[in-house]
Length: 171
Image 1: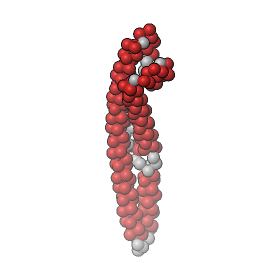
Image 2 (image 1 turned 90 degrees about the vertical axis):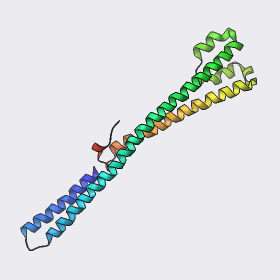
Image 3 (image 1 turned 90 degrees about the horizontal axis):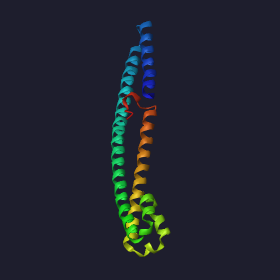
Image 4 (image 1 turned 30 degrees about the vertical axis):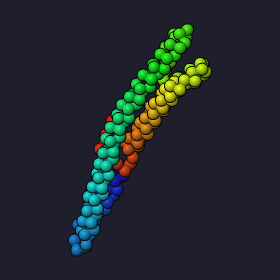
């Protein structure tokens, strides 16, 4: 909107030049008015170009948010599947704790079972499985951080005084 304010000031200067020309027909004020009119048009065009680029970035960011959320869901699903495999293994090896294992296990709590059952660290397969679950959880958190960064950018574009905010989609 600052482009419009700037264009308004330049346009006001152009009008003052044309009024001065009307008051004194023998002056060269019409050249100044023409110059300021051209500058007004250029400023408005630049504002539309800048706002169009922001519009394009906003649309791209909304698509990225959707993609990040879909990838996050995939990572979460993978982590839950691996956690289920981990729980099955624990239930087979520790049947007396089966109810506790199945009721409370989640991808972000698999490391607690290594603390609860220290002999599990001897199984290389379980260590790799838990590392993979932890990596997937880290990827989920990274996706969430990326989404929040993009949302911050989209909110900023809606408040940026240099953009024609009526052109910027708000989601």
